[in-house]
Length: 255
Image 1 (cartoon, rainbow, N blue to C red):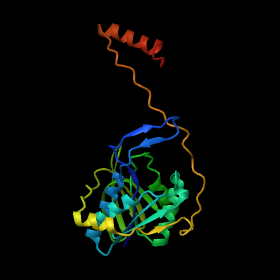
Image 2: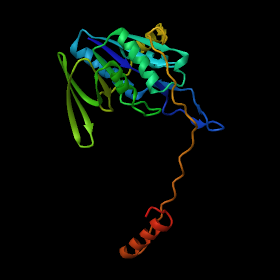
Image 3: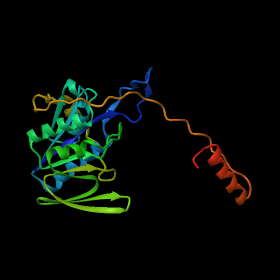
Image 4: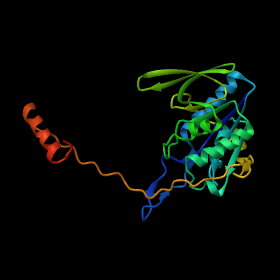
């Protein structure tokens, strides 16, 4: 079995972020890490390898000079190999272009199972995993919290607003990992040192036969509106109800 894991490098959740002058870009502290949900996906792939056997895992990331640290983290955790899709056309690329790049690479390398995080902690779009699955022509189960593999069949569980949902599918299939699926392991020191010294294979979009299309561009950033302070309404319930209606009508203007 061959497993592909999609990984993304994102700003550390504790990194300082501020809107640059003019509101067109962001100034971010240069602290970047493997996306939390992708880290769970890597752990899930490693768990499958331990339980099934005969599994090769490769991690792939796409970006213009970014993604190497995420790949090294995946390698330190225990994946067999890593591949970096590195191309200037991926600078500021949208989910579709990134998905096309990842799908093109996975088609070239081969796959039986694709793991990805449910979403990334920077834009939280949650689009790349399902898009890659669509481009590969396979089913995608999103937000997986448990998995069982029996030969060519998989049984996955996911949490919905109505409770736990059980989904059955046949390989090949793509799964996106939700919090609680697995707790990512902490790489051993020797693994980290080995990963830091490892050569990171790079390919371009041309190498995998992908032509980048125009991506949507961010027009600007703005801070969320400051919430108004909470106003407590005093008095008896009947009087308070009348005052609440007046405030909603005259001040908030929602009725």
